[in-house]
Image (cartoon, rainbow, N blue to C red; front, side, top):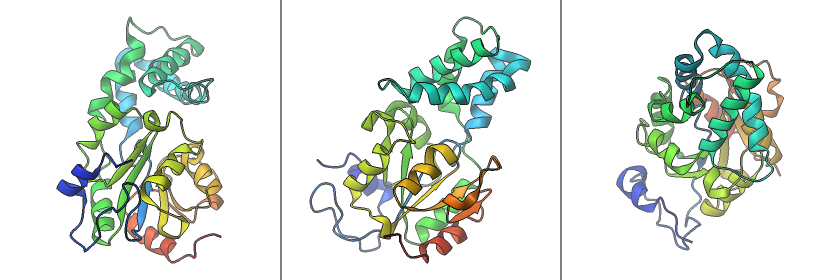
Length: 254
């Protein structure tokens, strides 16, 4: 099955570094070095974007509703059954508001979906990603998002990405493993040439550990989780290139 990304990579994502073209539709003819990222919370500023949208419909109660939303989102993503992320956003916000006894205006449960195309990107993401590309890393996203919502963010990224896997594509949500497995199928990446980078302890650090991947935890939220599952911890992307360099020197797990 050929990759959907080929045309876009040739235009902006493929580096002129002598890499061979794909030979079998999925796997690469050479062993690229891959960094996979979560998008929202790591590269795109979810809390600022969604917090602002929620303030418009919940006012002074926005903070309480936002905190309750995270648990509601996990519940809907866990099933039963898969549902598009835009439905998770709306249903999760409605449930969070109900739990906090906050009355949203008509259509207020769609606030996150409406605001999604204006999601800001962290200012430290562009320089870090550019530096990593210059060092020869290929970049990919594993995102709990729909294709159309993710496209509104992808077109505004400061650096082109080579590949991505969405929740819509695999009909699953992290922390389950289908994102990781599909990425490996598409690219031929293995533990030897693949490092995962993300902000979320639950959605990303835990499944990366289950996959046996080396990882860098971008702990922007200072959550207090123990850093033992990650090979390196940083609190912003400013030091990410150095952290990736350190982790790449650690032998891959068997």
